[in-house]
Image 1 (cartoon, helix red, strand yellow):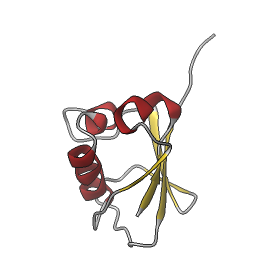
Image 2 (image 1 turned 60 degrees about the horizontal axis):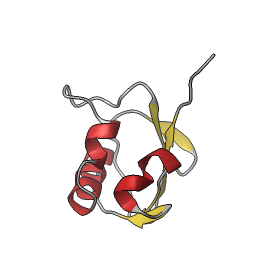
Image 3 (image 1 turned 90 degrees about the horizontal axis):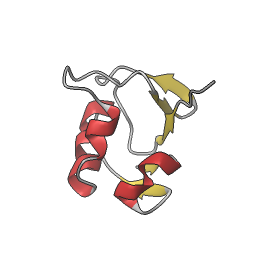
Amino acid sequence: MQVLIPTSLRSYTRESKVEASGATLGALLVDLDRRHPGIRFRMVDEQDRMRPHMRVFVNGKGIRDLAQPLQPTDKVSVVQALSGG
């Protein structure tokens, strides 16, 4: 399935859209990391939870559960929250 990558993570992918597969969001991120080593650690912490500043949208709906089932036709967007003052 197609995954939209934010600018902050494109040093791993070199592209704004990449392909990855997985039956769940967690499996998709593992496959994404297999194809682009190191990217998963930027999104998922050591306790296997989404990092607070990362957001994933599947077909426009915000998802934080790595066990969320996915379909091969889903569109996945990774977004990094910005902060500042």
